Image 1 (cartoon, helix red, strand yellow):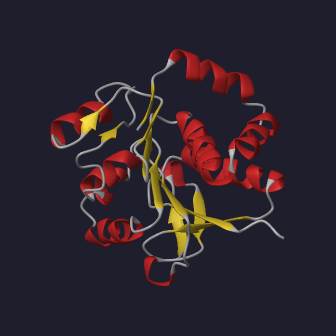
Image 2 (cartoon, one colour; image 1 turned 45 degrees about the horizontal axis):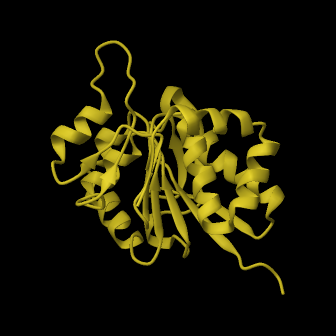
Length: 212
């Protein structure tokens, strides 16, 4: 019998950091070489062109209104998170997506989940390190959402909701999501073919991981 198809939606929006796309869609794309029964697509408020940070243009395959069913969604991070936490269409879409699905976020995508109320009463994390006069997203999460148990962590798995730390830790989150939905063997093989096994092990040893 053929393996059951597992569908991943990757949420993008204006001013997502391009590196987050590599850590999410890119890792899933490589995982599909190991597990061809993976399906993945991008979704934004509207289908079509999306301008990432520093003017990289990518295409959203679907908008909120025509988004196909999926098993898990990953919310990317980037400077555009500040607009998305005020976008009622985005928040309502994520609230609907939380029903019987796994909702995950990398980097400042966690702040979007927080604004949607999906992290209330749960442990969660987000990006910690910043440059210049930027405010730490981790501190913003703690000060702005007192109902969330904010952790300094590589990733936090709260069951149906997963949040991750900053930038390249999105790779860890995506591999964790693959393990959760498709099994450890597929996640480990994906880590091997992207030459990330040693980095993953180092991150696991040096950083806190919270699973409840």
